[in-house]
Amino acid sequence: MAVERSVGIRDAENEAFASAVVGALVAGFVFGIVLHETGRMESIASLYGQDDIVVAWAFHFIHSFFAGIFFLAVVNLLRVTDPFGVTSLERPLGFPVATAVAGVLYGLVLWALLVATLLPLWGEVVGLERPLPYLHEPSLLGLVLFGAILGLLYGVLFRLMTRH
Image (tube, rainbow, N blue to C red):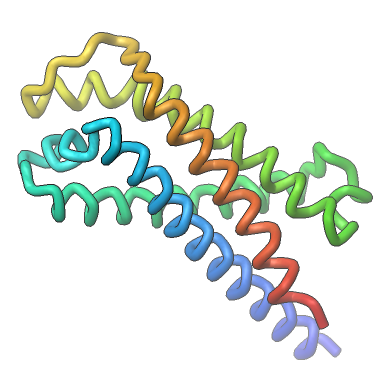
């Protein structure tokens, strides 16, 4: 019984990881389109002393990947603290809704920490001038959209993969 439980937990961890990564990369693609269309994608490359659009997209997907991993940690924390209530996390539609809401909040926090605060500070190091706080509205929209898509896809994919 302990071995079956251990294998089941390991499978769920793998499925959670896969759900977070796929959700983050799809959400990253959508957010990247927002940045690209607003002419801000190149600024990602410039954070690393580069100016190539391909490099910008590569770094953007790396950022998205790590944002997905951190989101998974947030979801695991939410499952432990259960702020939405057990019933919402256990119902088939409740979990994706809860993770989508968590994703929107996550996107807002990412924007406040990374774009509004850390981007101007890092910009000073690499020679990009941005006011502190940097209240860039397209990135706010993009990160809220990123979080919503990440959260929803994570919830849906995890439910689909763990259905028996």
